[in-house]
Image (cartoon, rainbow over all chains, first blue to last red; front, side, top):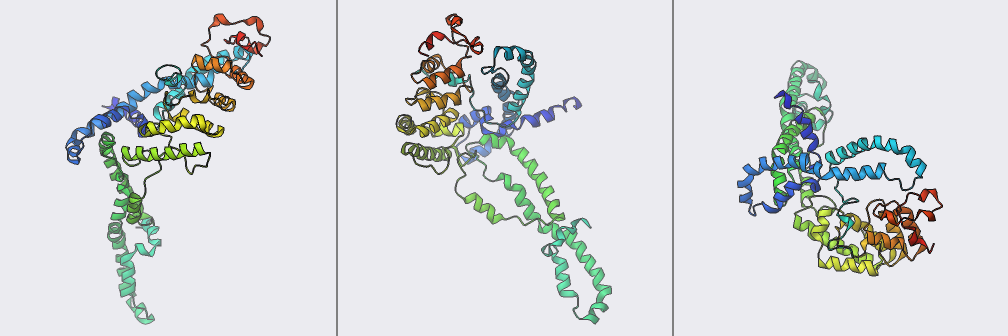
Length: 137
Length: 297
């Protein structure tokens, strides 16, 4: 039992991101498809909805949200560390080792920030914005 | 016994003591001094009862009102599974908040909980659209549709807009319909330059692909719009080839030069097209850009 104590701070931390409605993926699906219309139906479902809703909340925060933001963290890292468009070839060569060393550090920091904080999950570069549906116009 | 001293700075918090002093303590000097052997222990007893019984019981409803505020405005229809899932946690926090609120009010002079103000808040007009959880989902979408329509109309007319359009992605999507789509297409073709830039900037954050028809202003007819949006978007997104190439070949030299500066490192160009012999600037030496496109420079 004592060995599971480390789960408590992790659960508490992961509970922050789904406070933002945009980060509730499983809960949004449940709300969209499985909500009784009547008040009586909602009360009747409450004994199931409480544990399932809570579990889904933590699945959203612990599994789905980090799985969806790791590539956003990479985009952040790429923009912060590897955007060398305005730099000379010499400066690129000089800072290359620093960029290599800094990449995992920046990625971890941005990933943890995106995972744990209730930020808006706005679309970024290299997301579906690259091409409109139905091809380019 | 000394701890509630702060609360008793306010005479309203010492009801029994006030009543004892008003009714049982003589005002004339002689009876006052003669009664002291009785009034002093009686006063101490009144203070003790105030501290232990009267004041704590009188603030229970205030502490309860404060602690149950988090149960107001829950959306059991649109956000049922979230509300149900966090209800036990909300209940636990309510209990903790009630106890700490009770202790806080017992020790310190905290203003009474305004139940009437709370009910007024509940009955007041809907929250701003950008606030999450404003009313039901359908009400939020309807309000968002109205504000978006007004905003797009103001962009078309070039008039000031009192407020700001909703920025919450799901809210905008729920509100978007054919009428707003038609309005947005009119904005893209008929609105003044600054209004179009404002629209495209908003659309970049709030609209999914396919809702905007001139590729976020990068293919707008006006070079000022193309240049502004290029500066805004170049570092935020990778452009599709046909848009990037159109910008590099832009008729307007300012837009073409901006595109060259901002897009030269995009890696989607075919390396085999590179013509390094044309390059005299070392800063451009590792660009992937096809310089044959810049013969008119």
